[in-house]
Image 1 (spheres, rainbow, N blue to C red):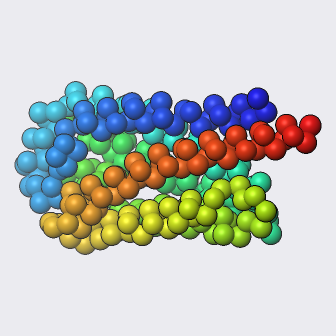
Image 2: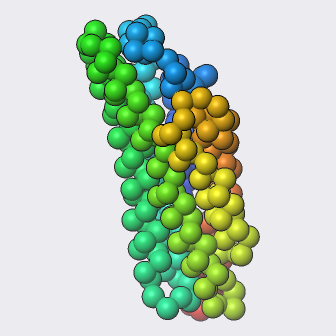
Length: 234
């Protein structure tokens, strides 16, 4: 198989996704999500009472969330196959993806630091918790940029047989638009746009899960078509 490296990178994602979902469920701060209206005392008590669950769930996140990058690297490789004026959009896409994953990792580390010394001052604990939530929920501009770069490349692909079908471009546009409301979580403490709200938390992660699933199948098909075309030439 000519594209065995891409296949390996692609299949890393669903394997890691299972572990990340388990960590997501195991973290007591997500089910249900912590409220930004919690007092300093309540936040500090939460970390003191859930030290082990927080530590192990965040360690799992920290080990495996970065591996999501492998699937998007495959997308970058496929973008370079597109008949666009230059590979600039592919490089911009990969750079945006790396930034998104980095911010998720920083959020994980903030929660880990807050749980490292649960006996510390509640003021410091609530600061770390606020920073973790804001890093985790708010930076949707990077995800929207990533989606925009990929959608643009698909629309510009002049190949008779496009590398990725047009519906993938619309998928990326839709995912970007549906996650944008999360940016408001830094200016409200309650309601649907707060970091625990229906738009900023639940809709965002449902959209992301659907996006990753559909992108997996779209990229798998692109790899199959690439191998078939190269074998036909050979």
